[in-house]
Each structure stands twice: as structure tokens, then as C-alpha cells.
Length: 557
Image (cartoon, rainbow, N blue to C red; front, top):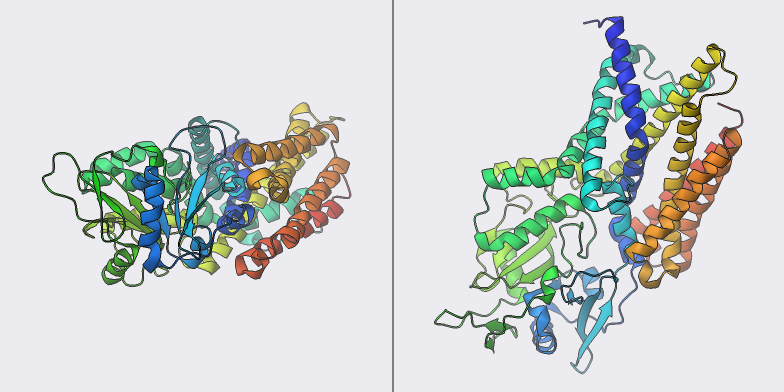
């Protein structure tokens, strides 16, 4: 069916204006989102290693627990045991060291081990917030606002994004059939930007539709979760902390290590500062104190040792690979252990895996709604939706595909803005204007400043990590990013035109080229892993792309 010319023009106008309004926010979201695919290796590199003895075996973990909880009873209510060797190197046993208090100081985690003589060694560690900051930047589309209002604005941007996608398909799809692969690089600047924009937009359309719809869901997840719990109530009332925490984390994040807005694998939770239930207690055979709950006529059974928990999980879920055990003391015989891990055969609700909830004293399954491959149909559908956003399916090839699609998406929004600027300048010249209008100058400066400032700001954060205390607290890395971002935006207004574009692209390329250099100087161990090599290689390619762009801009557009 052929649309009337006035309808096509209306959809084109809607696509242009909605895209212009949302484009710069979406550039930040997509570029930072591509970086978050490397979140775990970057987090590991940025955080200062802990000076612990070699981790004890899982069989000796009850001995470690007995000594640690005797010396630090506040840890009893919420502590984490690392199962995998990589996590264990950062601390086989960890818990929240802040006492559950809300404060502005760096998040402190306590890590425990045993020395060669069997003596308890407890050291504090402060994880770097650099990777978490980039994740929050991605979630909040670059807005330095409190989380709730930023997420509301993000939801509005995502709605505009969806409108731009639909209107663009309706307006331009008929013409794309003839000119799909005709990228006219040697012709006018407007045709070059138009062809690149159309080509990127059409071939990544399914990806962008998924991102738009899922972003709306994440922005308004509070209301959606209320409806979800109304329709699909949790089967066990006592698991509210584990279930809600895992679900919220699965939405908001990606970093292993706890804290607001993080992924589904727990670090020390906020429960570490709760009173350790000062009732009398006895020492179980596993070495963990089992509290006597007032009102119960008998002593509760002991908490199951980690090896027993892992054996139960292996029998009940073959193929599931446990990585972290999070013991939580809920009281009244409903104490639980959340077993976080992954199963490569299935998509996951969170960006890095899923979890199941067991009773930590009996081993009975409390919940499996968020465990890959063991979900009811209603939860499996929701999980598929989440997995499409996080790329948490298909393993490494899919994650690399999401990196490429994320960077291509950022470039799509840049080309859209450049296309609007070039078209606007051409119309102004045809109408006889000698000097471009204020609106055109404003958008041109914002497009150049915001895009190059975002790229340079994120690169500057990871270049600064080795010299920042604790690998960069949230406030420190935020100051680094926004200082660089504002510097580039200010320079774009002070240096308008082609000279300013070349200068800012070159400067962003220089800062980005420093990332692999800093990895070589301070993170040689990371370069020995495929993920680390991927980070360095991607930074090198991006810097080369920016330098090429600076060279390409040799005439006024």
C-alpha cells in the first residue's frame, strides 16, 4: 500500500524531531551500554587486590566461618562465600563492612581467610566504582540526577526512541528498497550521512526495537513489578529479601559485588549491620552458629556447609554452575542461601546469571523462578525479555555482537543528528541566510560536544583508575567523567565549525588511545585473558576510528 505524500512527510517530521530530542541521550546510553559488556573484567582490574592468604578449600570453609563469625558476629545475618577460584582470590568469605549504615564514604567489604597456621586474617577492601558508574551512566542516559527522576526521564526518552523507530520505518522503508546498499560516500555530505543512517537503522532495527521496549519496562519497573507480584505471587513469604533483591539487581545492573543498582550476583548485602539476633546460640557441626529463636521449643538444625549446598544443587540442577553462595538469616527457621550461577544452555534474568533459593538448614528449594532452565513458563517469558536486553544468552559470541550493535547504535544517533544539521544548513542557504541560525549552531555544538565528551569522559575514567584512591570511588569517577564531558561541550561552543570537530575528535582519540596503554602499564594480568584483550583491542579500534574521523572532516559541512 502506497502512503499519501503528506502522510509520509508527517512521519518524516515526527522521526526527525523526536530523534533530535532523544538522540544525544541515546548516544550516551548506547555507548556506555557497549562498555558495560566488559563490566566484570574492568571491575576486576580497577579494584585494588586484597592482601589475603591463598583461599582455603571449600571443605575447610566451615572452619573459616566458625572463626570469622566468632570474631565478627555482625556478619552472621548476611555473608557470601565464593565458589569459583577467580572470586575466591578476592576473598572466599566476604560481608558488608559498613555496618548497614547509609553513608557517603566508599563502600567497604570485609574479606576473610586463614593463614598457614590456621589463624583468622580479615582485611577490608573497597571495590572500585568505575565500572558501576558507567553502568549507571548507561541506565540514566547520562543524566547526573538522583536515580528515581533520572529513570523517569530515561523512560520518556525510551518512549520517544520507540516513536522515532516506528515513524522512521513508515516514512523511509519504501524508499530503502531501491537504495539499501547504495552508500554514496563520494557524493554530497547530506547523502553520505543519509545512506549511513538508513543502512545502520534498517539492519539493526530488531535490536533497537528490543532496546526501546525493554528500556521503557526498566524505567517503570516498580509499577510493573507490583503487577507481576499481583499476578505471580512468590510462593514463600520469607524469601522477600532474596527474591526482590535479585529481581531488582537483574534489572539494574551488571557488576559482581553488591551495592545499589548492581547485577544479580551478591556482594555483601545491606543486612550485615542488622543485630545478630542476640538470642543464645549453639555451634553446629558445620562450624556455623545456629541461633535459638525465641518461641521455638527446640534448637534449629545447623546451617548446611557449602559443599553440602553444592551437592544438593548438582543433584537438582545438572548443568547449573554455582559461583556464589549468599547466606541470609531471615529468622523463624526460614534462613536461606541464594545460589548464584549460570547455565550456558539457557538465557538468564540478570546480565551475568540467575539464582535459586534454598533453605540453608534443610536444603529444601524455596524458589527456582529465577534459575536458568528451571522456570515456569510465565517466568521464562519474562526472562527471555530480559536476556534480549542484557545479551545474557549464547555466550561470548552474543556478548561481542551486543558490543558491536551498541557502538553501531551510538553511531546511528550521531549520523541522525549530523543529517538533520546538514539538511537544516542547506535549507537555510537556499532561503538566502548568510549565517546559520542559532538553533542550528546550538545543535551542531551539542552534537559534537556531547558525543566526543561522552567517549573521552568514559576513556578518562579508566585512564584515571590506577591513580585514584581505591581505584576510584563513585564521587571521584563521576567528577572525572563530568569534568571531561563539560570541557568538551564547552570547547564545542567555543570552537564551532570544522576546526572544532577535528580538534575534539582528535582529542577524544588521544584519550581513548591511552586506555590500552594504561592496561599495559597497570593491568598486564588482564591482558592475559580474552576479555582483557577485547577491552584493549576495542579501545585501540575506537581511537583509530576517531582519528580517521578527524582526518575526514576537512571541509565545512
